[in-house]
Image (cartoon, rainbow, N blue to C red; front, top):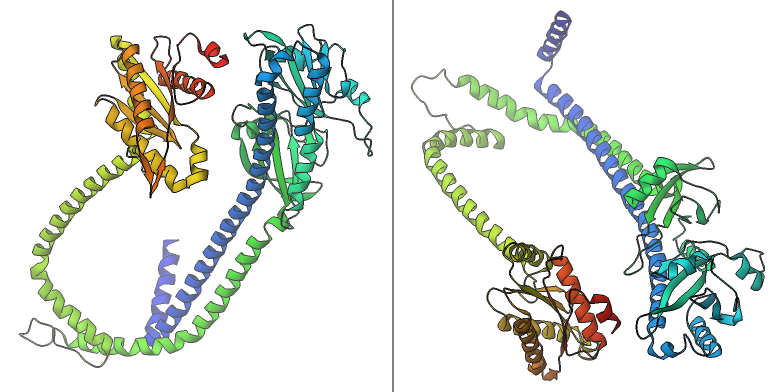
Length: 581
């Protein structure tokens, strides 16, 4: 094998010896042009294809994600509507009052929101009042929504309600009614459970949502489906069949979102999926939204761009072949002159400096470069020292830049207070210290009252001025050992170390009254500002600082609900009672 390679190399050298420099340059330029242009074109085509395909996959994934988000927000809104309805003060006397008045109130709720049926069942599982009188007087003891609704808020997955469907008007298309249940316990003024409020959402709203998204897909032939967490199609093609299962379904639920290729009815499809995980207080039912496009349609732009780049590359390669001969002449002339001049170097005795050459710009430049090289050797050591000094300066500058970046990463850009990430790190250390040495600590949650009204009335710039002014008051009011941070928007949190309950209350009130008495100006306008404060002290049963912050946030909630511009201490053992109050 080695002999064959050597023989081939000898033949190649023999051919080179018979070719002129111009011919060799022309051949080299042509080969390099073809290789380089071909490689660049192929690489660019591949990159373009992958980039375009990634953009398309991102677009399809965006459709699935946005549709899933709309589903989750819709359900969260309906759940919140039901919860707020049970907490309305006028409703407290109706739950155990006149059923007719309660029915009127439920029908008013139904008219304002998107429920097919709403009913209230007492603790004996009898429907006391309901919209339209449907199921009124009936027992719902065996209904899952009633059983689970006695304990907490429950959202049931899509199902058919046979009894209720029989009482509703038959649809024109004979489609069966399918519902999503929302139920929650109803409490009287003392907090005692007196029954369950249940509502049925007609699942047709989800079908309408899918149709709306598909109608506005930009002619991409996007097909959307909604699947249960068990893989059954709830909305979309092949409804009420299992579309995914086993490891594939488990992988989708674990990944939460992604894209993949699949074959549906003999057609290659690009499919994106997104698993809903709830919104705010709504925990979600792990509905899977899929968006599918035919691969031939979805990737058409990617294939077209790749083909165009390859075509352009082929044309450029042909042009390079034509110009190779012309270029070789211009390159060969100075090389021949340089060869002749180099042949004379060393034949003359005495001079050590290269003589100046002429005949072409390239040769003159090379001659100057070689003469300059000899002169630059003497300066090499000095330049090395200068390079070392510059490297030291760069290292110092890098260290200074890193310190600045670290400060920016730990600070809220608007107020100069700590941001959430740096605050939580300090707070975790404070909790560990308090737990180890049995020292007291407290947390304040501070929120601007009616901040949206300030933005709407005076503008967002005025809202920013208000946030900065309150941050200044908080910074001036706390001790050097305390830490303050902006958690986002108009919300602030303060960590008070080594402090008892009485002192913490005094400090919280001082901050609140200082803010209320401060003059916040935006231009010539004076903006009245008040805040509500939630206070919580560290308890030995707290798992971490998040428990203390959560309790302070609940105290803030009570302060807001009981009139604002006040401070509320949330005890460690009375969170639910305080919230109900």
